[in-house]
Length: 377
Ligand SMILES: [Zn+2]
Image (cartoon, rainbow, N blue to C red; front, side, top):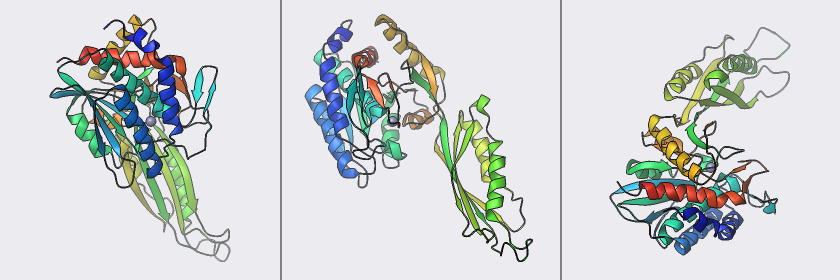
């Protein structure tokens, strides 16, 4: 199938329109009604472009998920995407400027959904089939931790030979992701003993002071050279300036490169010894997503993509992301996973979120050719 890129280049305008439709269907994760409406746009685009099998998976609190199937076979290739975004309705304008399309979810990851739709469309239109099927699982709560779709993702991944994740690529060149850091979250709560700040300076135990000392200790656990970083993103505590604080709390975000490294550092975070007599520390939380570790299998997938890119006249690189995705779940199950396959762009979760429109056909062709090459066992 050597003419897949020209076929998709001719459909650049159709891809742009499809993306605008998906972005206009704003879909903040926490608004089920809006996310459901966006899911319907995605499903109608799939039936327009592929005419394949569509299964709607009802969810109670979050948007309904979709399982789109192309082809037949006992083995399957999984493509994993989410159509919720971090943006409240109306928070960002939709604009086209200098070949870039700006808008909520343009880069994370409606651009990736569009290239997936058109990659499968290209196979369908050119009657490319094999003895494996393609399952495109579109979920609705990735931006809030995938609590309701995780089991679905893992069930589908276990049935798959590999997983492609068309999440946002690495700016500025659109490198694809062969590794992602793991993420853990913690809440550190300090219980102190309240006392008057002036009557007896030695009385009581100040929870804020204890927490401050703990935060300094946590800071020492940063090891940027080895990919470990901690962020204390929120603190609360105390009641009045003249009262020794009875309560203080911090929320901590940890990023790490390997499961082993994560487990070691989590142990250190969970077991805190107080400095100030009379205070008590409790730590809750743990791993949200294990890392997508750079594996031999993942790199082999990358090489296939790199070769296709070369054939299409550009060079493609691999990289590491500090953020997590649903690809972390599938990689943790040992299923070869490659991420960041979405179009070139920038600004995930930022006000300058955008994709490069001219790149859409290239990215769709990249995925389509990979699928074509792997549709046969
Ligand atoms: Zn995303």
